[in-house]
Image (cartoon, rainbow over all chains, first blue to last red; front, side, top):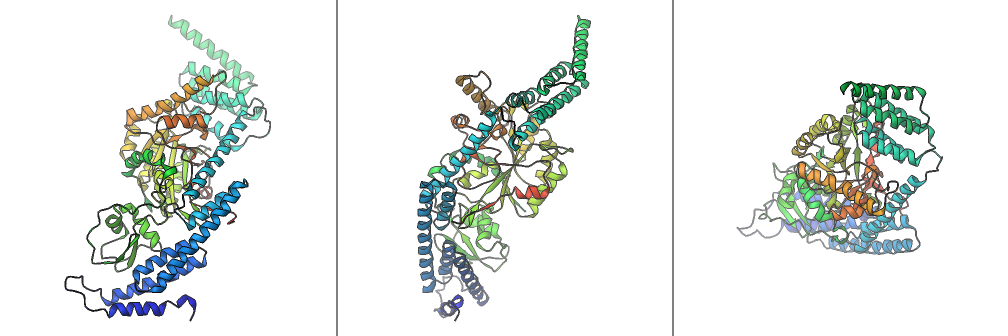
Length: 264
Length: 344
């Protein structure tokens, strides 16, 4: 008989044995109907197949779960208990093997390899505290390196190479703040970026133009003082402001001064 | 479609602080769920400490079984995942796990991860940080139709501590800054799908031209779908000292950046802060120290990727959703399982 089906006679014996048990006392619940019993048989077959699939896939812990369920569905079946014990033992053996590999990789500085081996150790032994602690620390260290890299890039003022995506995000975010009405917040962040990247001519022009456009919008809305602040910031951020901008600033300054004089 | 959160947001927030700080010492084998067990039902076939096996009665479902045996209908996914993922029918033999079946979400080939999506603004003109209403609708529709469970960011606490598993395809939604379009455009879509979302607010923005006001935030919060969390006071990069700023001045500024939004959200919305979104996603040890001082146990960055159970709570990954993303690019951000590259 194919190994895969070698349980079926035992299942049949167990099930038949259950059917031949003496009548239950009157206080006990009524025995399940015959159709229900066959549902249990069906569940047993399905769980055996599942356990075998997990074993074939190299996951004895998941297989052990299925064997444990089978010991509940067919408590008189000794094979299910043996399979449960064997699966648990295999899972513990693999967990130890993976844990040893993880420790070794960690000692030799191979943190990614260590992380993977710790994950596998946990897959075979979900209660392993050492693996959990090690994974948390490895991930913390990995992320700390990411953050340090970001900070180092931000400090590298002289970098002339194209900026990474993270900085593109910073600029877009600042421009969004500006567009949304947070003039102070947007200008502050854009100024910080330009201060850190004075040689990024194309991006400075883009920023300056966006700020100048915001100034026009404010001026059209009657917020002339804010418009003037935006225009002047645009000139600084741009670095090579067009003559039309300076003319517009001069005109607005005069208009503001005239307005104030008129109210005196 | 599955969703979680709603009324659970407030409870999850309260629980978060207590749970996250204890991550490192969390017991790994969760105790059986403490519910008062009902008398053995006639349909019960067998039981041990880990499982009860029942025959599903007419009118029952995974949710009613979860309510009866696990104390929470939202744990129905434990039952579904233990029974092949198919909703059981009346008469089926159903295995009910009494402990979380795989609380850490680890498999020999990889581990479960929870992606946190990060949006900013919604509007008719797409830009990197502005997602159109049609694109947002399509993205939420994709989540709904493909069996994703959406949880508030605070729900990650139980998962990170190893105490509470989350369904295999779980995702969190966050929206940064506090643009009015969150209320005008995103909120109706979220409401339609009953999807929760976490709004990260920088408090100086409130009242600016295109910002939310407190009444709108209160209305969203009252729906049980949106929780408001801090995103600094001014949206300055908290890791960068300003020119000429001394260490003491920097620390004082950090303190204001952390304290002000927490106080504003507490005073205006009555909400405790359980997570903090770092402006530009940047964080350093000084920022984390300030969050610890205020008992905020977690922080989110904009480093993309999903969060495994072992993620450091102050370095949670988030994936930005851009207005220029295609639906395929959006799908690629739904990292709910991280396969191991080498398999050693």
